[in-house]
Structure formats: C-alpha cells, structure tokens
Image (cartoon, rainbow, N blue to C red; front, side, top):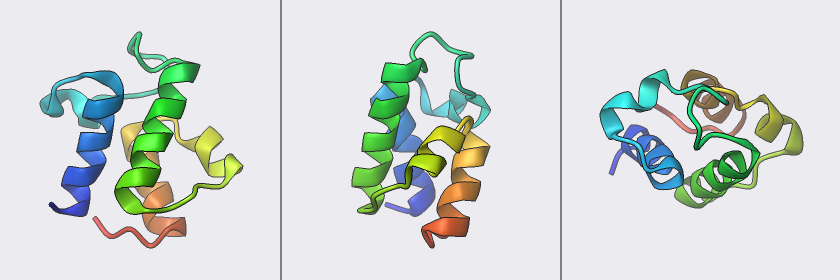
Length: 79
C-alpha cells in the first residue's frame, strides 16, 4: 500500500467516508470531523506511518492537504 493510500485510508477509517471524497475534507466541514473525530484521525495517521506527531502539528492538521504538507515536511512521509 502506498503512502497516499495509507493516508486516504486513515480518513476513511476515522470518519467512515468514501475514498473519493477524502481529498476535499476540512476540519469541521463534515459532522464526523469534530474534536473527537480529529483525535481518531491523528491516531489512524500515527499508526499508519508509525510516527508520534507533535502537539503543534496535531492542532495544525486542518485539512487533507495540510496533513500531507505536515507529514511530508516534518515526518519524511513521501507522497
């Protein structure tokens, strides 16, 4: 499974959404992505990539695209 697929699957697992809609997701734009859902997403991402995200990055992860930017820039995840 590619890193892109792992990343998308993290959103699918956390929010129960269809893969096709994942790239457009932003915090609080769907009911499932509230503060509790956010922590579920972080847990999914950390498990998928075997990382521990810093608090600042957890707070900054506010969209699908921003998450990719954080993961590639700070955690050496290549997409």
